[in-house]
Amino acid sequence: MNTAPTSPVSLSYAAALRGVKPRRPGENFTYADVACTDSDLLTCLAASNPEGRFFGLVADDAARTKAEEQARQRDVKNVTFVAGSPRNLAAQLDANPNLVPILDYLVCDESVTALAPLERNAVFAIAEKNLKPGGLFNYKYRAYDRDDDALRFVIREFAPEMDGSQAVEFLGELKKLGSDFLAKHSDVAAKLDACIAQKTPDDFFSIYESGESRSATFNTLVALNPRGMIYAGDSDLPSNYLELSVPPQAQDVILKCRTNPLYESVKDYALNRPVRSDIWCRGPVPQATEISDLFGGFTYGITRSREDVPASVTVQGKTIDLSSQLYVKLVDLLTLMPASVGDFLAHPDGKGYAPLEVVGAMQILVALGIAQPMRGLHEVTNISSASQPRLVGGFNQHLDKTAVTGRLWLASPVAGGAMLISARDALVMQALGRGGLVNSVSALMPELQRLAKNPAQAAAVMDVAEPTPEVARSMIEDVVTKSLVQWYAYGLLEAA
Image 1: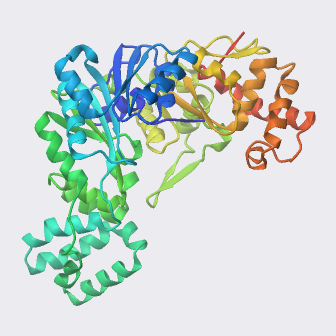
Image 2: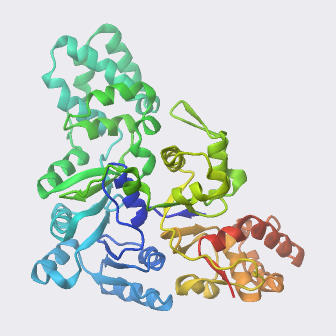
């Protein structure tokens, strides 16, 4: 199982890494997506956070009607859809500020379809005027249009101010920074090496003299800083750790630029990433220094199976050993059910560990993408009488009416976000809901026979072309053994 990004709890956690005091899970909040292209996913997010009010801005009335009907069918009442463009919405909010409440979270993803400049400015205006102090704006966008745009921008900004010796040194820094980019562009790497050897920086710089030099990263900084917005990290959690996201040889060079206004653009070149997912905080920023204030309210969980968690992870040439007793005990518990730092310290396996030690280990597991911060407020029902499980909530219960053909989202009030379920797991979950454990084989067989008519879909869930009761039974036993306890722990199922 995987959770979708941009959940309220994930955004709060990422900002907490920068010292922004997070909203405590369970407190009421408002969340708006002003470029909503997946209304079903937003509805799932709303179902996963019952204390929140969600708003989605969709393209037109047809999309709004469809989204509202999907929400109605899934009995999700805390999501509202509005039709129009960001500019339309900004104008409506100016005329009627109560149209949408003051926001805790604002999300805009234009990484696939870019907004026109006036529409983008309208989104920034909404962030400035409608986010509460401490509210978070998650902005995902293409920082560069071409592969070499980040390199072009860095050269055009830095090189003109350098004398001869500085320019020669700069060539070496470009090589250190761009190891990932240069590995994929051997012609550029060869030219750079030649210019370093011959100490002819101008020969290399001249390649990038023509063409537009543009960094959406830098333009975003320029646009949002005057609006009272403070950069608060990346919603891609590993990207908030320099040592886990940037090649080792580039780290010292980047650290030298930390106070430079072009710092994030330099990082873009080192990371060789065309898309950014920034988090901005509306000032004044509610800051905290105590670890308990920043991370004490989060629950953490591991949605993969225990055997799928590695004993070590190598990132950017650095191997992180996860075989110590603390990591082993944490992983053992978190693959069984979500737990907070306090929960672990109160658990027998947590005896003898200091809170800061546990927080540090939790953060490493999150940074590596193994664990995830979660909402963790759902009261798990008794799983001892699980012979007739049922799906929890109207959004998930809609699975009973769904012809499963591939992966799909389910709402988890524990994760506080949408959870991506494989087609195989969804079919077994559906069969358990329809027939219980006793009659699950007979409930599953018609669905497998339906899928068998489409070989590509069938191959995703079973290894044979023609399903049999034995195939269905084996599939149920395998999935239930691996996943049933987690389904209960994450509030996807409950005992009937």
